Image (cartoon, rainbow, N blue to C red; front, side):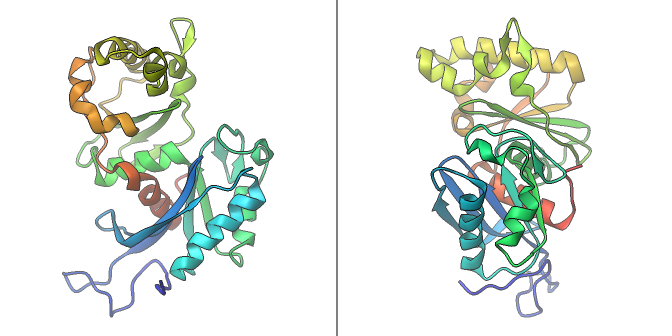
Length: 269
């Protein structure tokens, strides 16, 4: 690929309206893979294919930063970029590490990643926050005003909170105590799999978690993400909480899209 990049396309790559497309570049760092791509910031769609490389093991800051640079260089991208991280990030500093090496804690992720990219401007944000931004702007939350919550159900429960388009970063609703247990130890999709629960049995636990969140912040919309959201028609109608719940729409591209959004305006604090 030879698509050199900045936030706006050159006149030779115009959208259908005849105006240059606004572009961003996003990298989504996961426990098993690091994927990236160029995003049309007017539509939230990827421009061309994404590139995915395996997450190095151990996933140390230096090893992950080198892999990110390989993905970026596949596109010849030279402009700012956004990068998701599976944990809490404040002002570029990593505060927690779950599915990556604990050496990340206390690391200035912006500096480490940028050093492998000749000093390109890097914005780093929590992976669920990135997905929430993308879903609220382009996906299941599009057109909804007020307070929107994204919950990603997987090994744990990730969360994002967006108010009228503005991210409130680093919510950790998966760690809320609900009935004496952390929310994610009660209602993550991994718990359903571990206990071989049916959807009706599992959604009782999900409902308890949603009600606890509702009673604390009164959201206007809840978006359910994670792999299990692909089967939302089998379980979302069984929920008994009061806030409308809809399935995530962007799925595998949400992290890349949200990271690209963050690359053009720092939404992390």
